[in-house]
Length: 144
Length: 150
Image (cartoon, rainbow over all chains, first blue to last red; front, top):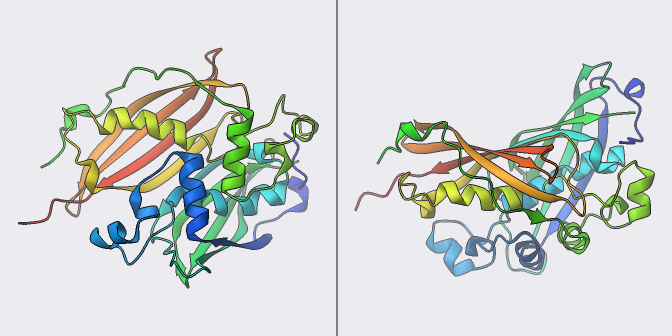
């Protein structure tokens, strides 16, 4: 594991570079194929509305994969992630308008956990259309 | 219908091995739009200390969720999958999943409870490699909404 961020260089409150991830219907079809999750709520508008959703929604696991990129792009080595968890609080609604939705992710070092292991906890915030789409989104990362 | 509490602690047999392919990792990384070279370039992965390309952190979910399907589909448990949504997901990694891994998943029902009319079930998936070494633990919380009154 070779994180490019040094434990000694971060403190509680250190902000990670925020990122915005676009999601279109095409993104969801591609993710369905790659992940094997073909639930029609992620590609069939008629079906999504029949089960009470406002429109097609993104896979929760796609949102989870996007959010952690703020962490993995920061440390460089994705293998530095020791723990990662989220709660799926609100769906990312993806309209069929060619533009889709945006997932906006920010992250802050919330705790320095272990000086010997050089682990920190990063708290992530993920929003789409102004609403938080993940709760309790936290990663434990081993730094250099 | 409340789920049977006696299923708490039940462990299902390990799955057949899933062989992690280099091109499957690439396909997944492209689908999430992640260009980190550790996922696609063996030399870049080796420079970080990994023996081969590694998979993005959430890649393993496809494997653990398929294994959790054994639990979900258990007719004795009586979960109505059409009413199930994904509540929480956590991973604890011993090491990253990498190309060439042959992974098995052992699923255990950690908890079953009722909350505000919903049935909540926690499933733990322990992922091991071919040598029997622990790779990652996946904790999946599923929430089954109550059947509508007809």
